[in-house]
View 1 (tube, helix red, strand yellow):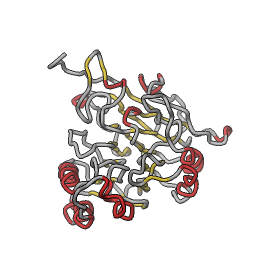
View 2: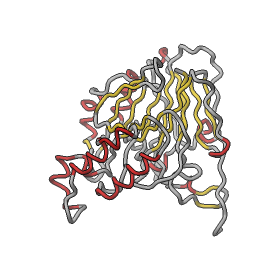
View 3: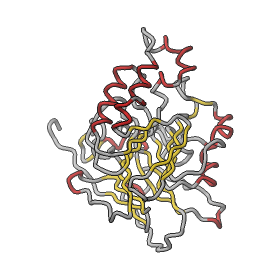
View 4: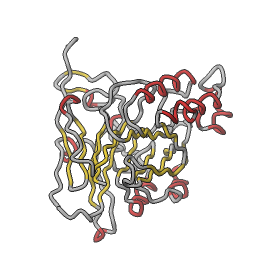
Length: 315
């Protein structure tokens, strides 16, 4: 199948105040409905690769900016981010961004690097003047507020790089300590975590659901407009969940082979006061059975089926 082009699909999710473009042709992506809406472009697990993403108001990146946290990898990632069109670019680390977990890296760096990487140089890349001028905001267990329009809605976001223990990588926590960690997460419009919640776009190719149980339980209270994660590359997908107080705000159980994800879904309820969360696993590294489309394997980062997920929210 050498030289064969992998085609794009057409998967859209809709509700009265949320629109998600999950699988789309970049040249045919509709604009946001009006200036009363804000467009978020969601990516994750880019591992220092670069690719085209759609224009929008805000870029959200849920970690694994690099492969192992090398200065050279951060340079490539920041060069890419600085060249993207979004005015706000909010990013977190993931378990592969080893050097950003400073205390852990001091003890573990020789497992990965012959020469210890300079955290000061990396932080200058992420938080220095060039990054600020490009609109890059790096969050490490931090809350941030921003407006995309003068006198417009004040959006709030919280970013956490932590994920359940996985062979002693960076920003790992033991599952039994997860409840204490997620208890520190504030209620915000947008929640960025590197790892997904349990049973929400978290299934690995072997069939195990590996997301965080404590995070799932905490979502009952947080109920953000967007919860963006990555980490599980083969679980790329999105789902709009309506929070039902009669079920004690039970989170969804959803994977990316569910029809509501593979073919899209439309929520007909017109009540705009209903609380909903757009759950997104935006991992851009093609992995798993979904890399094969029409007999052709997707190999490029951010390629068909693993594109940036575009989320339009009504302010």
